[in-house]
Length: 267
Ligand SMILES: C[S@@+](CC[C@H](N)C(=O)[O-])C[C@H]1O[C@@H](n2cnc3c(N)ncnc32)[C@H](O)[C@@H]1O
Image (cartoon, rainbow, N blue to C red; front, side):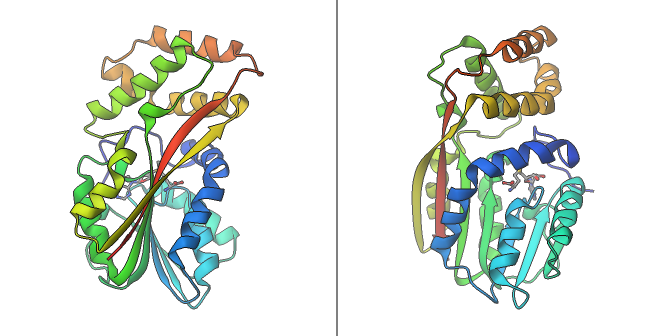
């Protein structure tokens, strides 16, 4: 079975709660982005790196039973969660595919009206290869919608070294694994270089209140801390200090701002 060796986060039920929290914060802007694509009834859409399927159900609802959604993920554990979610929502026009977007075989090319990726490119050693694979799936005039983070620009006006250390360590772990967690900064350029006919990009600032930020950091840290320790970026003592800081964090402290990059690219 294929795995993405550079993926630093957890998969399956372990990751589901964090992905859900993330989706709750991001969904107004993610849904607004989809509206700009004019995705409609009867369309075919690929949700690439679908994770726990938060956006998959949204697409299934938009395209309706006369359309088709392909939910692709390299992780079978993620797909299991997504499949349960889609089934619970009562949709039957979703096809689940386990595989790496860069080495897909036996799928129909040039048929998709839309492809979607949220936080997928930033986890790749070779994002150009992913974008070329996406281009193959799209029909002429089809649109690729993407959303990626710019981790280095996440900030809190509650300036504390622990928060900065946490962010910088995660950035360093991405670099160690060959990924760019600031990929949002070059999102439109990637699509332009891949030869898409028309590319539109924009940024949005999101805000995470401290209670949610705290929960999010704790869940995310539990997923990647062992990899950062193995990579000798931190020691277990760092994790203890950070955890203690989080436990004692004042619930009234300011939250976090984090910018997101959005791109729409028409083939
Ligand atoms: C950060 S999660 C985001 C999940 C979902 N897009 C969301 O926004 O809720 C990234 C997902 O992409 C999947 N993934 C990473 N690399 C992949 C690849 N090369 N091909 C297919 N899926 C991949 C991971 O397994 C994971 O489920």
